[in-house]
Length: 208
Image: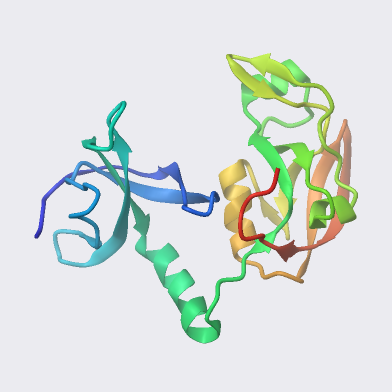
């Protein structure tokens, strides 16, 4: 069967994959996508595949469609398929931090030296970040109804590429492979520093 819909957002949304990790830059559409009878490719008006329909925003208390569905972008699918065909598995580089995107408000409240980047809130034991000595946050506080753990490093670039958000950090890491060593530019307090990090392999499921 086929159904028509409108693309209502691109490059703005993140969904969670079955293994618990985020998928960035998904395509939001109001095409009907329901469990059990929908899915497959999302096509544009020229019949080009632009994504793979994957998830819906369920109705409260149920699993019916409320008019919002999400498709994984075709570029993401092609990258994953290429690895599966070549090696039979997908290896993703892993830094091992939990963090938040630095906004102007967070920069003001926490008196950060920059107003864009990634605030490192947690560092996983034994991860690439831990081995490189990255510093996690120390005290939990609430800003605009959201909990944050400031006091840690602020990452502003990876491998020479500026990162202004958590999504951009994941994008840059996606261009690297486990075992590669990259330079992280960060701020620790008001001090700018560069740290060499040998990236690890993403675990099967998020830890902690």
